[in-house]
Length: 102
Image (cartoon, rainbow, N blue to C red; front, side):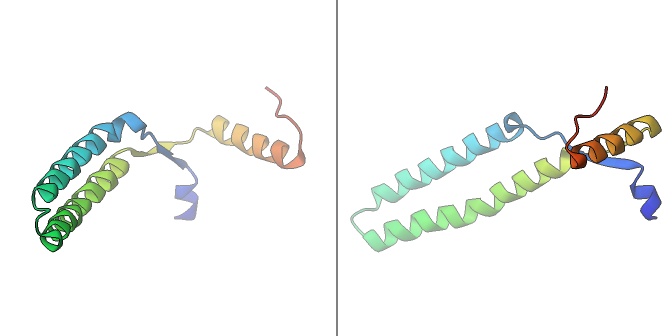
């Protein structure tokens, strides 16, 4: 089994644009929650509880969205024999402080 894992390379293709929409939606929800909290300022304890409740209830959904997006952008790509040798040569050259030859 260890030999099988050496034939593949894990690549993360996640970019900021993939999560940008999620962040914007979460910020909108938070600002709406803060607006609702501000309307309850005549009772500060209730205002604090409403703001905290909205934050606590929305944070798990945000984390779930981030994690699933991240997992959807992790790929296992097969490593070709020539590419494997090139990467090994480059690693040896970089550890020796020599620029790899092209």
